Image (cartoon, rainbow, N blue to C red; front, top):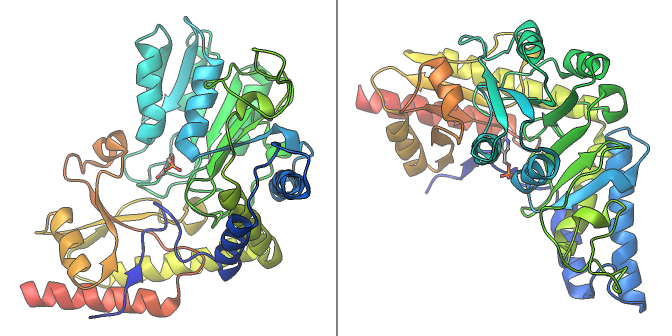
Length: 384
Ligand SMILES: Cc1ncc(COP(=O)(O)O)c(C=O)c1O
């Protein structure tokens, strides 16, 4: 059996830093729930949750840790943001690159009377023109502009700094799906003029599955999506007014949060610029390797500065599902198909079969990539 090569970090990062596994284990053995008791174990659980919020706030350069709401994943954060914000008659402008975790809640909201407009991306690069987004926003009164920072299909990065500034000037709320960029690129939430930002904890942030967060800028109040116990204000049958408790009911995923804390501290020690430089190098190596093979088409921006870590390609004469299957037989984990983003594939012209998506992570090695390219080359030679 060949050694496994994991190149599906856009789904969830693997491996995680050793200290993440250790932190999860330690916290599970310690017991107790955060905010649910005044004994020592419960208080240290509460401290761990508080510290993790502080670490996240520091990592994303914003002085407001109480505005970070822990969620199960990015999807839960997106649903809380959209259902908690939008009212009948509101207009939302978004892109044709969004993941189903955005398009499906928006579709459900559309059925309830919210107006949704989707702006197309450039088919070659996957970049959405900021001017097109702005003119769509100005075509009718708009409540929210929602943009995917890094496409999970094209890897294309959208100019969120420019869009945030513009939305602030126009009085339009700005939301960013940072699912493929958080932990991979420097993101300064204070400077970004972003009102809502969502991220999974388990992708670029290198934390465990079952983690994610929603950042809500100061001054914005959302209606909770779920109601229940929060450990405080127990006399009232209303949810707390203040964040984060307002949007966090039920027992928190303490092992996940402990793992996320260890993961973000790992990233902090490395430094986000070094993280970005390392991942960029891995992306370059994969693209160069794919381009060295005959009949491979790589999609997305040629400029590495406009790219995150998801690399989509196709091989002439092959269905992507077949390539995924053949690579799996050689113990290479990549993702074939539509990647929960059918509109992005309609844009490239790869709908309905999709593409083969290869996504390295921070702990992917150069040797992994060399092996991947060698195994892909061998299977193409075998078949031809
Ligand atoms: C762009 C984008 N948004 C949202 C999500 C959903 O993330 P999660 O699985 O953490 O809910 C993904 C996951 O692949 C994604 O790529």
